[in-house]
Structure formats: C-alpha cells, structure tokens
Length: 363
Image 1 (cartoon, rainbow, N blue to C red):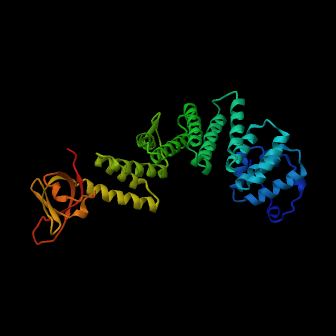
Image 2 (tube, rainbow, N blue to C red; image 1 turned 135 degrees about the horizontal axis):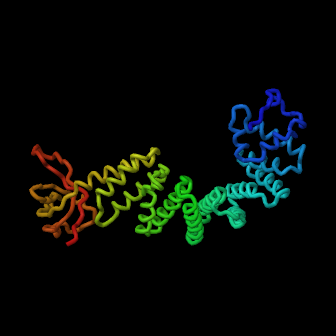
Image 3 (spheres, rainbow, N blue to C red; image 1 turned 120 degrees about the vertical axis):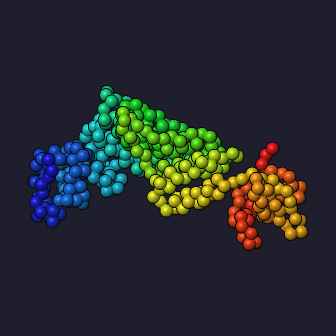
C-alpha cells in the first residue's frame, strides 16, 4: 500500500501532525522496502518523506518504526551521522530488532567503523535460528562487504598481514553464502571482487603464480543449474589486462594466450584509459607473434651494423636494437638470437627487413 498524499500537503512544510498519526502511515514505515518504494515514486520525493517522518517523530517519539524509517531515509541521503543517531534511537526502543541492527551495521561500514560493523553483523548472524533464511544471506554478504571495505582502507593496504587476515575473512563469508544460495549473482560478484583483490595484491608482492591463479577465477565462467552467472565488466577487464601482462613477462611466453587475454579484455572494456593500455599490449603481442630465431653472421665495426640470417631471411640490425647492453658485439657472431623483423626500406631491394627487439637465445 502506497501513501496517498494530498498535493497541498506536499507544498506546505507544516503538515497537520494529526494526519501523520494515521495507522496507515505508520504501517508504511514498518518496512525498508516500502520506504524505498515511497521514495522512488513520482509523487513523494526523499525530502518530502524526510519532513513527514520528522513530524511523525515529534508526534510519536516512542514509536520504533518512526526512528527506524528516519534512520533508513538518512542513510539513503548519505547523512550517516543522522542515520546512526536515529537508528540507535530506534534500538533503544527495540534493542533486539534485526532489521534496525542490520541497517546500523551498514551505516557503520560506510562510516569506516569496520570493527563495530563486524561486531553487529556477527551478533545478528549468531542470533539467527534459521541460517538458510534470505536475511541471513544478506547478512553474510554485508559481512563480506564490510571486510572488503576494511581491506581496501588505506591503513590496511599498507599492512599486508592485516589486509590478508581481513580479506580471508571476506573470502570465508562469501564461500558460506555461496553454499547457502549458489545462484545469487551478488554473492558471485563479491567472490570475484575478492579474487581480483587477491590476484592484484599477489602480483604486486611478486607472487605471480598465485596472482595468476586468483585472476583466472575472476575470468572463469560460472553456471549454476544451467544458469549463467555474469561477471562485472570492470573486474573482467582488469583481470584480462593483468593476465596478458603476466603472460608477456614470462621467460617463455605463450603469445596465443596473451593475444586471447587482450582480445577478451578489449571486448568487455568500457573505460578509455584501460582500453588504450590494452591496445598497446595488442600491438606488442602482434609484433611478438612475428618473432623469429636467427644467427648473427656479420658485424661491421666501423659502420656499426650487422646481419642476422634466419631461414633464407637476411635482416640488418643496429646495436641499439639489442635488448641488453653489449660492449663486444663482434663476439656475438654465430650466436643464436630471437628478433622481430620489420620493414626497412634502406634500399630499393624488395623484402628488406630490419631486426628489432633482439634477444639472446639460451643454448
């Protein structure tokens, strides 16, 4: 049932308080979903509802639902100080009310009071007799979300052990939620977000094998009972970009894998900056897939150029094309190298190539 307000009431800030004492109005305040429905209708905007609830609070200061609704509205307005104040007023009237505690826990998360939010959520979870309820799943999600916010806090980011401890708690909460409701998209999105955080942090610390393992979880397709669970495009793009970079950094990269990661990353990328980065990787991969193996068989010390032979292909090269510093290049004659041939029209002869990005081949 939606509140039907007279247009004159919407235009006047001093609405008759007696009208607000009607049972139907207070009934509307008993559900967060109903409150949100009211706010998203065309007739009642959030400021109007805020004013009406304020007048209801003045008329019935001992009514739990008035303070609870006001706290929810203030949270939706991002007025977290007022939201905390009014939700706590509601809990003074009904200390064990789960929905009010749940909303207060979210407010604590947004206010960066993560330990307080954790304490509230865990108390709610432990007090629930039916762990399979939808409400319990939401609590688990918000516990995990609180841990994610906590792990991404600047202080936690600078202290690896703390970050790892908190992120593992988030991981455990999400896995428990997946066991309860395996088809809930929100749970899988959080799961992949945590995997992405783990992967990127492992890469940053130099543990690239574990980083790759977690990023592969991000890009993995998930199907539950035949239902496809989509992944956030931003998370996918970031994972594909970092997997491509990692593959390219290996001593023996698989350029086909790198090409697939770049192509799939470009297919889901919507941000200009990362698209540009992926296009740069695409150009590198394209060149690297042309890489050939050859042998240095000549170097002119005076003119400072050399020749590399590779299965009938003869390429000129210059010292600056070496990927390492070498003082005695003539000593490299008869050594095997890998290189990328590029067109080099220094003469009118066709099929004249220059060797670039020259690397020594281990023998």
